[in-house]
Amino acid sequence: MIAAAIVVPLAASAHWRDRVYAAAAPIFGSWVPHLGWGTGPAVVLAIAVVRYGPRLAETWPWRRLLGATWAVAALWAFALAMVDGWERGFARRLTTSHEYLYEVPGVVDIGAMLRGFSGRILDYQPDSWTTHVSGHPPGALLTFVWLDRIGLGGGVWAALVCVLVGTSAAVAVVVAIRALGSEDRARAAAPFLALAPAAVWLAVSADAFFAGVTAWAVALLALALRPGEPRTALCAFAAGLLFGFGLYLNYGLVLMGIPVAAVLLARGYRPALPALAGVVAVVAAFTVSGFWWLDGYHLVVQRYYQGIATTRPVEYWVWGNLAATVCVIGLASAGALHRLPGALAVPSFLEIRTKPAVALAEWRARVDPAALLATAGLAAIVVADLSLLSKAETERIWLPFDIWILAATALLPRRTVPGWLTVQAVGTLLLVHLVLTNW
Image (tube, rainbow, N blue to C red):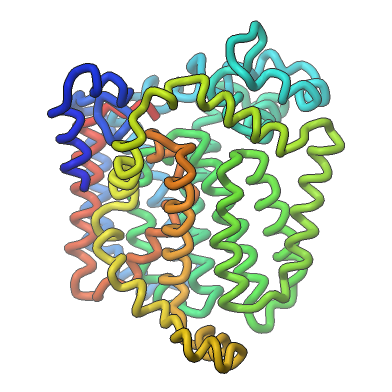
């Protein structure tokens, strides 16, 4: 699929290729082979993880494993960014005229910004928001405004926050798998999450921040479902707050409700009410402040079709998006997908029809947590693709969903893990050195 997605635009007419608006389709970037001072550290880190990662993931104490997973994921992302250089790869990536930081100096009154936010979404008016601000709810811009207000303004601090929060999603996935009942699967997935190809876009895009926030929403909900958890209501309420804030970071993150629903279905509905209370609290805060989510969403759909979305060919991007997703999750994740149906242990229709309560209880005892989360992430991507509101650039836009598909790597046979990690690392290094990505 990746090969076809590369060849089709190159073999097409110049006019059709121009309509794709992605010189390195299916990736939004340009074919520019290059090296950088991040090349060496990235190669060394990849070799170290392939050589020692699987063994250490099995033997290290749990908390040390979590810290190492986050540290390696952050270093891997930073090293890959440095292949493009300090300025382009890190410090200035979030400061261009279509990014959030461009609008930060103009926000002198947060209340007024929220009340007037929807009125500036549509294009072709004097005070239209820049591309990324207009395409998202105000929570994304508000995050960078808050950073600026506490003295962490500018591209470097914004990039650092995005990298640290984004790469923490790897830890959140590991925590969620263990909380749902399988520490072995969590440990097996950890090296793959630390060395994820997604790191190319986790450093640095605001979507990395979105991925981290919503990943911890799911992880906290999973923690609230653990037997004997003394802080069930608190964990669930915090999960609701994060999920609610996610709704105001990106309209598409409403689809994170699919992983949330999968977790509740598999382990019980006890935390649903406190989690819902957290979501309602965030929605109420933004609504009272003057921003109504549905108004923003409908205006964003109009803004989407004011731009190049009307030109980009849907007959290419409806499957080209999926090729870009494979680049993000890596061939190891794709190679594990055929194991999902068996690990899900879905009961037969006859069992569900005749004894639904028994079928549900037995399924909850059999379902593999890693398979459950990976399937939920995959389902969110399918829905996002069929919405036709994502044509290109999905390698960053779908990061919040992609990170969960990486959980499927926990299903790979243990003897094949070093080989699959090598495939992940080599594929990532080839991509980052051959394509100069826009994000």
